[in-house]
Image (cartoon, rainbow, N blue to C red):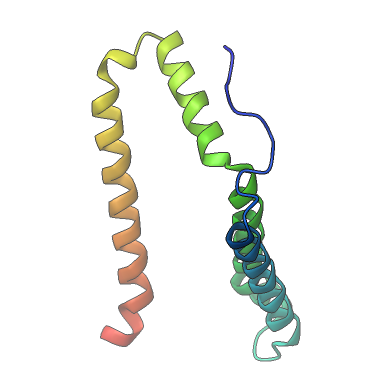
Length: 116
């Protein structure tokens, strides 16, 4: 299995770097907010804000390394190797449906306190 993806700077434009810096700034702000929060115990603060700063950190790395392209290439190569590529449209539709359902559930869960 040979991949076309290489770990390199994917978007060296000023807008690309601004986005990376914005993600890193958001990660820092979330980490500081978690550290300064006195309303909850430490383990609850880390689980709430800690995951947010990790997500922003991942987004900053992903912005420049284009990790979703790596994931796509690996999935495609695996499907070809296992002779599943002929039915790849089914898997694409299923993936989009699962992501859509997960997004809808996440939004509803976030809005649940306001709705009840």
